[in-house]
Length: 418
Ligand SMILES: Nc1nc2c(c(=O)[nH]1)N[C@H]1C(S)=C(S)[C@@H](COP(=O)(O)O)O[C@H]1N2
Ligand SMILES: [Mo]
Image (cartoon, rainbow, N blue to C red):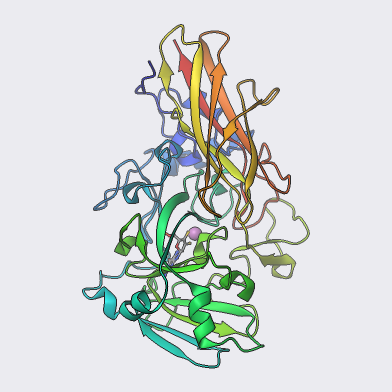
């Protein structure tokens, strides 16, 4: 009978440095840890000496790990992503600015659509709900920086393991339906998203973050304006009363507390669109270099990723356990996952996992596998996914970039038998 013990082999750099009894063990595991973690471990040790800080937030699971307090950012340990649909209490939180107060009258919330349209639209959430056909879809939302903790040297930003992602049931309307009413001009090329959250500085004239997408993605029927999450009114912390969900692309495009979408005739240039923000190198760059903004292009679809959601990293099993049942999740941005494999010999040989179909496009794909263990002892379980175009996760986060996007190293956990 599997039993989670008091050991924790944390997978993110900050956490495993926490001086746990098995820190040395954890150092070799590293979901996305570089192969030579010791050097960084020493360099980063003083700041991380306290170990992981757990979230205390109303309605949220107290095992979420705080990556930043101002703004509030919290990630979900992989083992908490074991539900088919991620419950709200386990869903990661990523803010760039201040969290607005909860609105008292959600249906009076106003959204404006302007710019390269024939007819500017000003609509309340109440009108949006009654005027358009509502749909519910289970889709992954994933932070553009997910997996960043795997980069060596470390990249700027929150050091996510793989838990800057979740998969929820979103209810709302297709953005395309609203854009159709507004009437796109032939010059409509890109969206620009605006919201009600105040900049960290408190300066009301500065947007906190304002990203956008190519008009083709805005017209994807799965790109939605949503007001409910898992059948509940969208919680304030997740952008309630109303937000965008742009599935498959960096989560930053999924504007929370949505107030306005301006249609532009060129790529948007708001905060989060320029220099190194949500941009990856055109020509691969030297890891650790400053980089050249002219060599960067905007990040769109997220890369393929699989995680083990059960057992948890650090799980202990009774002596004589010969078989382990694994469960996990996998997803691949705009694509689907074709195959998931698992290994217990450090990637020397691989066994194919059983992969489920997504419920709808952009849903994640759950997977299971049964592993035979040759003996008691310490084992690492590695998992890797391959997407529908044949791209497989690398052993280490590659294509280094200053802000650490696209880090999709294989997920690794450690277990102890006996
Ligand atoms: N208005 C607004 N929208 C936002 C953000 C933000 O800071 N402000 N953060 C973005 C980022 S970077 C991500 S990853 C997702 C996170 O959504 P969640 O907090 O609901 O998980 O929201 C996006 N939308
Ligand atoms: Mo993000």
